[in-house]
Length: 609
Image (cartoon, rainbow, N blue to C red; front, side, top):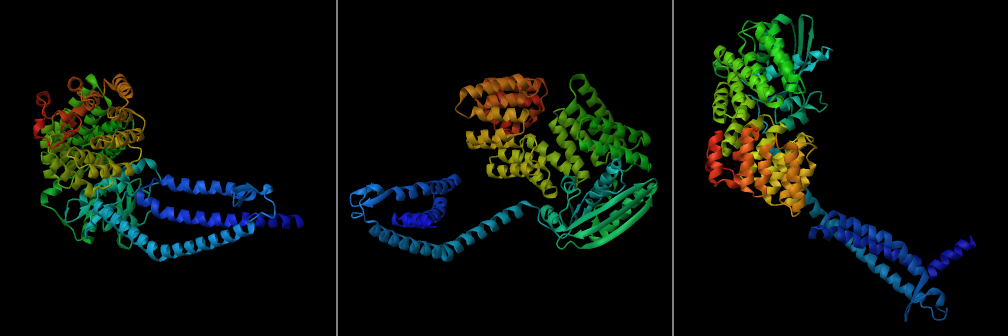
């Protein structure tokens, strides 16, 4: 105890304890002032961390100095060298006491100033910023209207995973059927189906989708019986305003669907659109429930889009048409599936044979049902992939006239208008589609591309970040942000975005693009050569884009010709491409556009980089 007491007494004599108190009070005051002033000068976040770490690390050395040295009139001297008669430690102690008192007074004053003056202002600023952010987010969502509904995917209550196609198919049928009612806004499939098995409550889902009502329920198919439980829920309070249970023989499925649709329409006080809307029906004319099941199964495989699924979809649609040869919707879907298989999975003669099958099935559909919107959507998809953009636009336009509530047709028409340089109308139509299907990442991606093409870069960045938020590992979104940063002239930001693109062809393309804007020419050259070596035969258009970034016009046009020779679908994006459109006034670009069936580049609204 004596030893401990002696040690403490020595600490006091050497003013170590006072130095510790003075240091801590000073450090606290410095940190508080730094926290207030550093943000004013836009100091990076690490600055504050560095300040705190420096003060913490210096604490022990400060105490060591106080222990080993004494402040004398001649300056700092080692404590052991100062005779007791010459020591002024007591005077130094009084000086330190006064300094501590002054600093404590300053600290208390600052504390009061912060609490009663600065803190309320910070809170007001935070509230204002939160309000602004909420307003921006609310503006980005569709406005909640009295008659608006999202059909959540009906749960498969059969206990058999192979019946998922059936519950999904009935859910999609409800979306299509309800979209034909006047004054009723119906959220599209992509957004509604994101909430499959969701634990979120009705209020949360309603806020995200901007709807007043949700339709939820389950489907159970057992042998020859179909049981559907359904309820309509208000999203403002989560209350169910209508519930019902339907038990019908499987053979009465179509009557059950109609009964359910009418009941929901009555609840929401919706009125069917013009009588011709009734003709937009994807059910078989001979009433074959088996043909309809094959059709639903084919749609399920096509929507899933995994390896081999498109061939399974083709097999199911072929079966549906064999069960009812006059089944126009199945013929149209078969045409779409053949086109998709050709465009995404085949090449050479195999692709041409698949396109021929697509045209054949589409011709049958058109003969059977010239007033069916799906027929023209299938024809538009075929023409789009055969680079007949004008023909595709006309087909999508007719499909939209016949089925105005079809969001996919609306988006497809917008994309064709954009590819012909009519970007203002394309932006409006795409925004309209997104208002009714706000959680479709692919649509946000294209919306961003259209906005960036006309120079609305901040809006374009917001749109592409929405896409990334919805699908963080999706391909090409970070590549699109790379182009936006290149348009801004920020090479480093472009490279940062490119490196966040998931591994694969789009990452390699984006990095090659970004490096062209930097100062490391060796890296830029190497990236270009690697791109040509790895993807020159399948991504000739993207090589042309990189050459355009290098401002090598001759090489850019050489690669455009290669893209045309290989029927690279990227050519279709030429008139919305700010990279290639730097040659907007070059006669060679006008000649190339004429050759591939695109309008003159001078008429495009795209701004070249």
